[in-house]
Length: 170
Ligand code: ZN
Image (tube, rainbow, N blue to C red; front, side, top):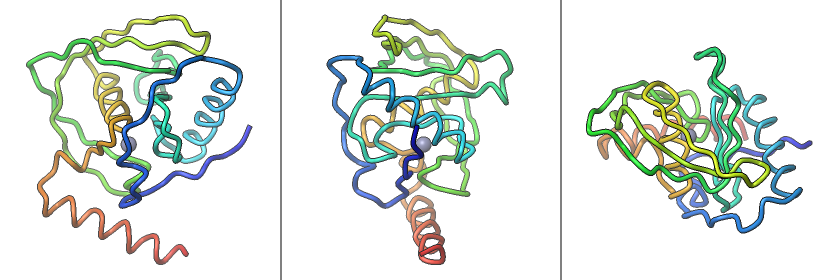
């Protein structure tokens, strides 16, 4: 297994629309394992492939620390098939926008489908924190970040803060 480098804003690779995976093979399974290792190392609850510079529709999620009993999800070509009209507001953060958080409103409940690591079609319904997390991660596959839901002013402020933080690290 290998730790991957998580890209941060304003890296243009975070804005690419990721491509569907055609075959779930050993290379994909190894990559999903690397994504999980990276997510845990970075203390994240979710990670999408574009965040590590790979334009494939792959997402891993583990919110079991906050919501005990929730399974570790490894999702290939995930797709939301239904969204509720009712919204829910949560405080979100993102490994690609480190150390910052903001409130975002999204549909409260969703239905979704994806291929698991064996290539088997799976379905999920959620109306809690998992629904928020899934929507956040799936946005990454379309080049969208949670800061896009904020005002232009606040978004730019967040990006500038991250840029400044990166400068100190380099
Ligand atoms: Zn994110």
